[in-house]
Image 1 (cartoon, helix red, strand yellow):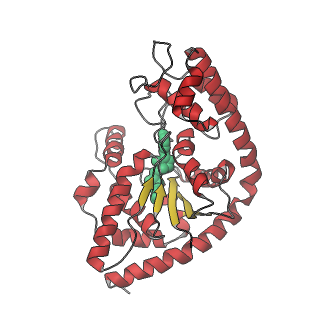
Image 2: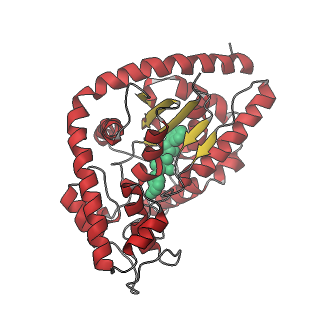
Image 3: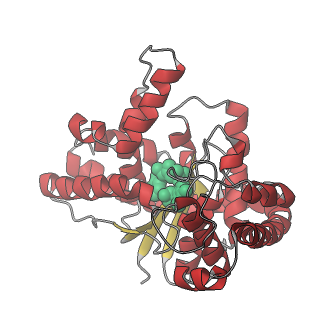
Length: 330
Ligand code: TYM
């Protein structure tokens, strides 16, 4: 029997090239070998306010982009998180074994809650949902009892907490769930913002030029690469001290399916203008192909999500019942 794999993407915004390189690419690589459950995390998207109309659009876009990027609905199970009520039910049980100290140490919580405080002019309006976000994420995972969870590096801390919670739950309630292991890509585990290459490229960045969105017009994406922040040296080589250049070399390598050193060698005698032109062209071509496929799959996503949910629900409910019985409520 194939080992199980689970992962998801939060529907907070439009998907970026970072989501593709850091997460979706690995999902595609794994789809022939594993029994994969891949969802759109719409419940997680509610942890900071989002316009309901936009959330609805984002959900569909992400499901269609999963397919357009190369996931095959005949091989993997694709669904919306909120279609499976077991996610919310297990979430509650998981919060009962999660310490507040563990949640307050999550760097993503610290970052996001700080932003909220700033936006609200000093009034502390931090939703409890944002605080318990990692418990819901652990529930998402545990429901399918996977061996692996492919993610970018920013989710590593959440995964480590999930492992801890599984261990605790197993011990406390005499269960035998797997401690899931993250699968983090060697190349592109953290694609950086084009405007501030110290930070990650993010769906929710306010500066449109900082991220390449998978649904950006290809010419717009090309221009964003031309505007990417680098440094003044105009020499191309791999160095952590040159995060802008390293980011462009990484994007090029990932989209060309070569390693970082090959990418460096290719650009060795070129200047930043040539680097940006070549990376821009590769990104533009990638988006053109992706978007052609995206338009073709749009009509089929409702059916795919429905079938996916039916399959996922069966497994999720079985594992939920097992845990409910162990906790003593069934
Ligand atoms: P999210 O939606 O922020 O990101 C989805 C996936 O994309 C990866 N990623 C990146 N990788 C490289 N460079 C970047 N700039 C970049 N930005 C994002 C993320 O690491 C992630 O793998 N909490 C999760 C969603 C989630 C989930 C789960 C994941 C909910 N439940 C259960 C796995 C298992 C999140 O917000 O990812």
